[in-house]
Length: 349
Image 1: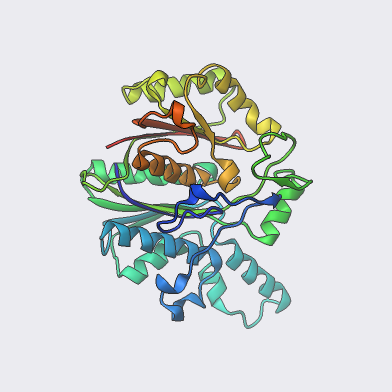
Image 2: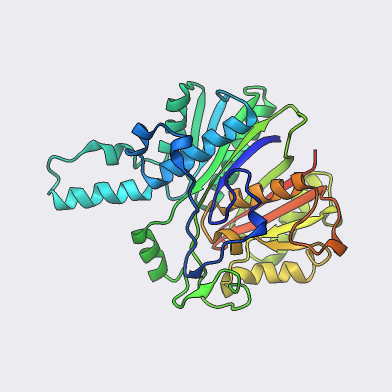
């Protein structure tokens, strides 16, 4: 799959043509929130007031991606989200209790479903083509990519808009913090990995990609393969899965120029990565991307955008110039709470 265009709303200055690496955004606390653009330039102002925050982020990133690619309507729209529209869900449930289930406005309920974002994009574009949303926890975005790959491979579509979106709200953050997912004490996102402990920092984001089966002169990168696996028994099984995946792509670990891993500062979460970094990943530059976007189930969408961005730029901005090499292959390895593990391989066009 060729990435013809990509758009990303994240806790960093990634939206538009900004050079986000020139001034990284720092956060202190237990979460990172998105830097949102001026939506009026992308969405009709009359519609904005009826959209919750995650819908605005999803629609804006999707429409911007289409604009970059010069495509009026894709052949398919596929999204992946674990949490869905939490803000609208919370609004509807709160009013249901407060109003004793009487005279409820249906708007919040209608917009609380997980497929609202892909549906809103389709409505704005008057696109009646294939439209699907995957809600599979930490594998949601990967399954959206796999669905797009099948559509392109089978010739059912030529251009597919794929996105990964999740938000954090006050209530969801409080619940997840209570069960130990986030840090109890404030920490800086840039010091997160240097001060390992229990919990990490919350994150959110909305990343969209225009994927095509035919190459063009302006492609960012190409996605060679995607794989996910569920609850591996031990590190040996993870290593085996990585080996099988790379072999299926006619590649080996020594050909990888850059590796993006999902380290998040949580001792239990990072134990898997530490084993791999000592041996399997020891000979390639590694970026721990969650220091930039925080932890959330579809954070691999941010990692895919970052990998494509670096490939398009021709080198790795995080590596000293003396060690710079042109990026030909980038591997993303991430797991979410050691349940959903995923691998995504990108390469230069």
